[in-house]
Image (cartoon, rainbow, N blue to C red; front, side, top):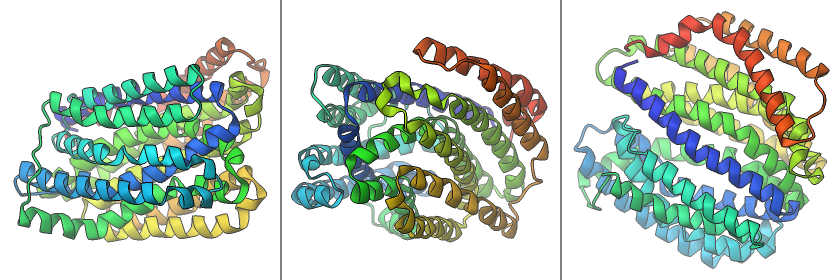
Length: 466
């Protein structure tokens, strides 16, 4: 990895650490101040808006990162396309808010959905600005708009929730984050003027035809479970599931997404410079890093899952869901990293086929399992994602991107997990926040003492030049 990539990965980790820490605070606040039904309703609203955000920003990072044209003119053209799309989606969602909310089993959430839709044009603009920073691995400048915007939104959400505003507190926080993001990005130096370049637009359209559907499928994959549970079981069932999902999502976002965010531009540069033969070795190092680091975090979270009751006894049933979703998160982390190389190597259609297969399998299974409850949905997520792991490995092999199976890393993770499990059986149940933190730190220290030395050489190898 180049020195720029090392610095970029550290800055991206710092950005995610701050922004996701604020999300954790928001999650805890919502769990403390909202009922299960309220949390479920707001989770459904956020899911719909997340889909809208992806539609308006389909392929933005890929287009800006890969273009051989003037990046500023390309970014300006993409900005025009994204903001116009975001504004159109806002109008559609506001107009159709009531039938959408009713279809999701939460008709009372229509007002929140209309308010949340106002975020779309702002997040469209901010997304293009950060994509331009992403192209050059300039994640340092992302700290202000990304982390700063999240902190503003978190402060608004927690303050309003603590004062009894209810689930609307999160929606107002999202709106504040959305407005702050492009403003802070401009302050950080990412000033992009909307323009229209026919050549850039043609390139963007060509890339969107392949990557765009993949991005939409990806966001459906991480939101369709909420929508299915809401439609079949109602918002109260979504509440506990969404809390477990939010917690299990943290290692994926903080580690796998960071590594994937650094890996894609590195691999794109290797392809552009004619060094495609170095992709397998690069992917090998990033896979081990993903497996070891996210694996450790998921082991600790799963073994500490019963501690979720410190947020209130009403969340006790979410503990089992959290354990299952930790397995889902680990599998998804591996797939996310592998997909970056498949896309960067120019096999976007195969990436799209994998994502489509994942969605079809998940939707088919959810038809039969959702009525059995949130636990069945979580188990479905785990099963489907791990079915895709060997399939994706075969796709890597077919394209000459495969690497030796990291047996040493697998053994290290398994051994460390077994040791943590043994220790957890003799520890008392954590009924306080202090006890939960102490248990987590002890398990994490145990894991690190076993897994990290076995993979020290490869992890240090992430700092090597590509």
